[in-house]
Length: 336
Image 1 (cartoon, rainbow, N blue to C red):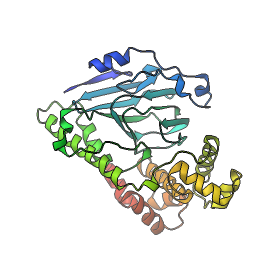
Image 2: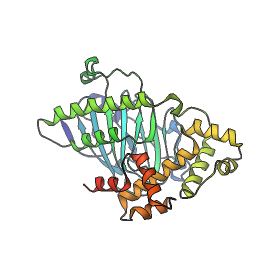
Image 3: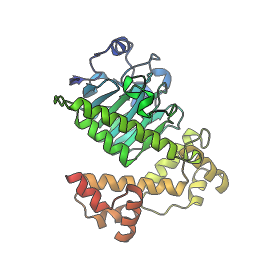
Image 4: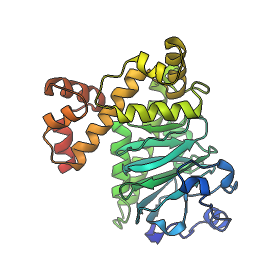
């Protein structure tokens, strides 16, 4: 098992990485530094084997190569604006442990771009061949782990039961089983115990089965669709919801905000985000609650009030439905 501390981009250790890491570096565009956005044409089009950063010294990273799966733990070292991009012939699972930004956007090819500002404890999945890129000005020093998954590896032969040819792209989602397995894999980075390799291979199989389970369990109607709201309207609606997170926002208010009829807005919003507006609003409330449970000593009751719940019991029910555990249980788990 090969691993070590390096400065982004990682020193290439495989032939694939050597050929891809020597190419043109990504450029931080003038638009990016002004918070306007990035253009996918700014990125070198060759198939990279690992996520690339610009400027390249913005982060420290440590890589463990286990064959079928490679783990790439990244810690951003300063709060300057940076870009990132990836496209390769292998899958990419992203586990954001700490991720908050003043401004920025993220895009996975096939999905609407997102300007979400807090995505602590979120996951994203980039299928092989899809482009992943974005830019941000971080509010906190980002901690993220990238898992590169090579389905051509012998570990994933037909006898392993890995037989799902297509997994859909996903941006900023959460699944407890996938999250727990990803953290177990991350914990093995740097482990020199001879038994670690076998444990990692077992976890790799579990991770792929969890991703396939998630894919098969997601109804087609719930997956994000092309079309819907134009990018500018998506950004305006998302920002409005973030600014009024603790308030009750009616469908009529949102529709009027972007000057659309109720029917057209509701249909277009679901096409863009994969869920109705009220479910999106509730999910963002729960995301904010999760962040507060992790990073503050506020009582559970106070956290509920901050995101719009007057009664602790209502907040507890909503959070349990979202995360599978109560707020208090989630906080205890984080403290272990």
